[in-house]
Structure formats: structure tokens, C-alpha cells
Amino acid sequence: MRETIKAGDLILRDLGYFNFEDFLDIEKRKAFYISRLKPNIAVYIDSNNIEYYKNGTPKKSSLFKRIYISDIMKQMSDGEHYELKDVYIGQGKKLKTRLILYKLTNEQLKKRSEKSKKNAKKKGIKKSDNTIELLGISMYITNIEQEVLSAKQVYELYELRWQIEIIFKTWKSIFHIHAVKQVKIERFQCQLYGKLILLLLSSSVMFKMRTLAMENKELEASEIKVSEIVHGYIDRLYFDLIKFPSRTLNNVKSVFENVVKNGLKSHKKDKKTVFDILGVCYKQMSSNVKFAA
Image: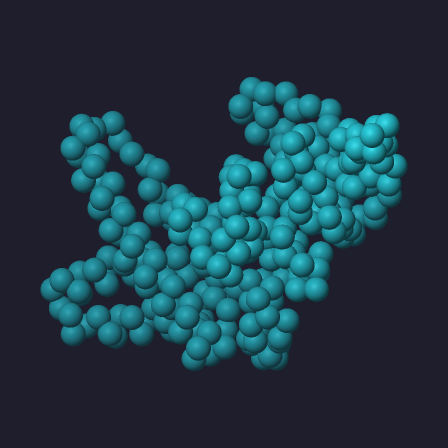
């Protein structure tokens, strides 16, 4: 996928796609990245106590000083952001980057710990003491300058990656793409292609509805709620497209009216939505007040 990256692009990476060579390539292409940092990756900073050989050559072992995230975490308050502008990561110290730390609140830590235990039990693995200790902190690396994006903004912007997970969630929970019976491969392929066509059509309608809600009503629609609404109409829309194309427009209007009435994003206290993070101006129907991040 490296060849698709263009200058100015922003790449959001989770731990499953953590790769030093990729980050170096992104920088080479004059693009930007924000990624989670694995808890077992060594972190170094420039040393203030450089040692030299008799011929004046500095000892490589004294050029860098290793720092321990657990020590920094103990000095941070819950919900606090902290950053180190220039660090080197990995034993080879290949990548010079900016490190952002965010200490979880007690509620966030409880959720993460429960999820970690569940995943470890499912996979039959045992977490290391270091990994367990660092569950209370989120670590991010980025090559975006502090003057462009603050530590808090880096943390918030990375949260946008959850939009990808939401798409997969709708595919599974609403469209049941994972539900497959034991059949011959030819029949399975037909079912799979059919479901992919259904998802393509549904996603096109869903994204269009969300766009129209913003452009015409200045409202933020929920990905999951709109997917559920579209799923309820999709058979009718498909049938009309094939048999009665003239009815399609009225049905699309019905979908939009339903989205405006029942498909808007819920707003939780102290939790930003996608529009909040991106600074998009919109209305909340409950108070009919326009907000701007």
C-alpha cells in the first residue's frame, strides 16, 4: 500500500500495522503518520553524558539514554497528556519521532483491562508484567510538528480511526456478512458476491444520507443508526431500481426523512463526535444550538 501514499496524506495506524520501515517511507514521501506505540518497544532520548574514546570518537553506547514509560506514567494525573518532542524508538534507534502519552482515567482503564483479559484468555496467551503495567497509558508516535497539532489533538485525531471499525461492525451486526452456512464453494462465492453488492449499494446510500443531513440540515448522522435505517429500506430500494425506477426518488426521500428523525448522532457528556474533532459546524436538535469545535 506504500505506493498509494501521496505528499500531505495522513496515515492512521493501529498496533496491527506497526512497522518501522513504513514510517520511514511515509516520511520519505513527505506524508504524515499517527500510530499507537507497542508497549514492548524501547524508547530513547539524546544523552547529556556522552563518553569519548581517547581519539575523541564518542562511544555509541553513550549517545542515547533509555527512558521507561512506566516511570513517566507514575508522575502523570488521570486524563493528562504528556509529550516528548524527539525520541528514538527500537533497539536500532532507526526512527526519530514525537511521542505522545495519555494516561487513562479509572473508567477507561477498567474497560481496557477487562478487554485485555478477555482477549488474552481467548488467544490462550499470558501478558507480560510490562504490558499489564502499561495498560493505564496510551502511547502515540507522530511526525507532525507540535506547532501544527497539539498533544491533545493528536490523541483526538487518532480516535477517528474508529470509523473504520464502525464500518466492519455494521457489516457484521446489521448485514451479517459473517453468517455462512456449510455449502459448496460455488454457492458460497455467489452468496459472498451478493452480500458485497448489497454492502456496496447500502454504503452508497448511507454515506449519501449522512452528507445530505450535513449539507441540508447541518446535522451529524450516526453511522450505525443510518446503516440500520438503510438496511430496513434496501429491499424496497433494490426492487424499485429493477422494476419501478420512477418510485426510487420517493423512497430515497423517505429514507432521508427517517434519518433526520431517527438517525442522528447521540452526544455523550465530555465525549467529542467526529464533527467535533474535525471542527465541523452543526446543530444539535435537542437544543437547536449550533456548535463549532
